[in-house]
Length: 121
Image 1 (cartoon, one colour):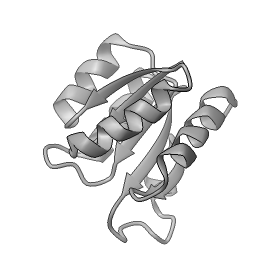
Image 2: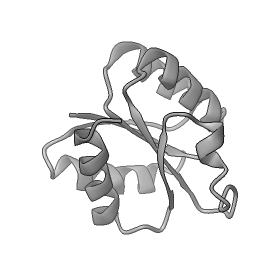
Image 3: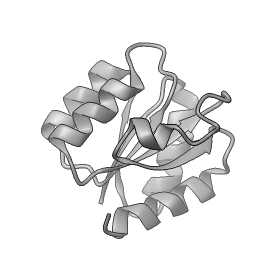
């Protein structure tokens, strides 16, 4: 299974990447919208971990492009803000499957990747 992490904080992205790689998955790490789009053009990801607030670019542009280019990919949105705490993100992004706080333990995030990467829509 291939996983894309789109996270502006390199340290946080690397932490998540290590935990998911331990499960035997191939993980790519993008820091912004442009890198994420480049990865999505070339690789077939099953799960995308996407920070709602990117330093450069738009998480929703990445999500929209993924729904067009990789329609089977499931998106786990993460954030360190209270944006979309009402669940409205699920109506804004058709490929959203989960919404988590950035502080979620990496092992829990990895378990969600495994679950959503192996279940059908």
